[in-house]
Amino acid sequence: RIHAFYQTAKANRDDLVINKWFSIQAMANVDSALQNVRDLMNHPDFSAENPNRFRSLINTFAGANPNQFHNALGYEFITEQIIAVDQINPLVAARLASVFANWRRHEPERRELMRQALSRIQETSNISKDTYEIVTRCLK
Image 1: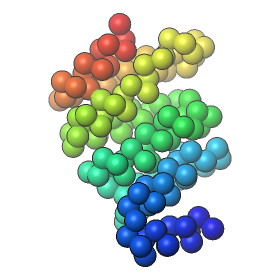
Image 2: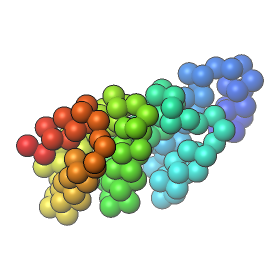
Image 3: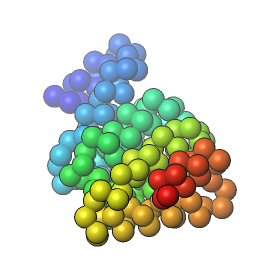
Image 4: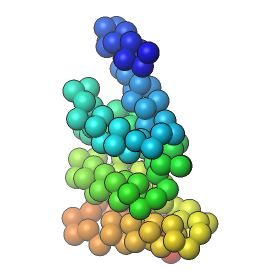
């Protein structure tokens, strides 16, 4: 069914619906969600240079799939995406970095992993001013 949903959107050249197709898969609470998101990053219709497409997949995974995002692999993946997209679109990266803003509210193990993710981003040598500012504010 989801393939038919995509095919119809593609045939109609409906970018908003294609974005929704990416989002639906990113928020699926399945054990393979992170791998599915990684695989979708190689889809011909995905481009990290398209802010709406990037947010529909990556930001949706981080913000709407808590069961699959809130673990070491999810944090590492999102950290990598923040650092990578920062080179393309710092505003998108900064917005995504805010997913770690509530790190102090989590239990100690997750709190430490999230703090480490923020520190890694902050210590990245060529990080943008926008992303650096958000990350530094989160760590204060």
